[in-house]
Picture 1 (cartoon, rainbow, N blue to C red):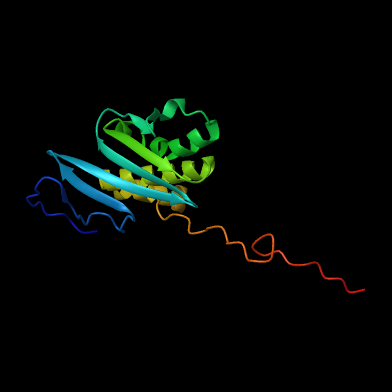
Picture 2 (picture 1 turned 90 degrees about the vertical axis):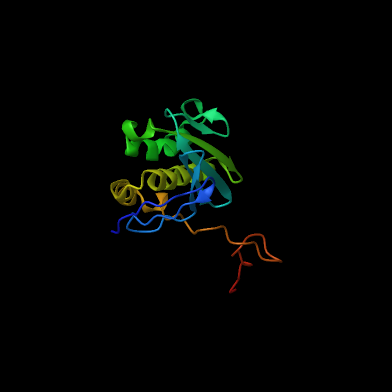
Length: 167
């Protein structure tokens, strides 16, 4: 692990730091108006979530709706996993605004979960938090490369074939 040397940073400049043992994909760290802002992206199938993490009091909003009153319980529990793993003391220091679109309900929940996890690791620059997320579920940081296979012309589905008769 390398150490960070402090340098002068102007407003709106993107900051590159080398404190984590591995690079966190799809994360941008900025310093705006004297405070740190992290923009993290999470993707699952066709759902894309963008999380903006800034100093605050612990508010988490998904498309403007507080996460505590999200209507679908399974999706809400999945989205709250990185927050529960990080602990109340870390989460209460930041506000998280997530914008998610595309895909289905659980695909969006997985994308939000990934964006929040990546953003928290980048914001707090904590190798312990990164290790915790990687041990719990590596897809919280790495992502899931699986996509649906395209349908082929002349057949109903991606791999369906005509039934073959031998007699």
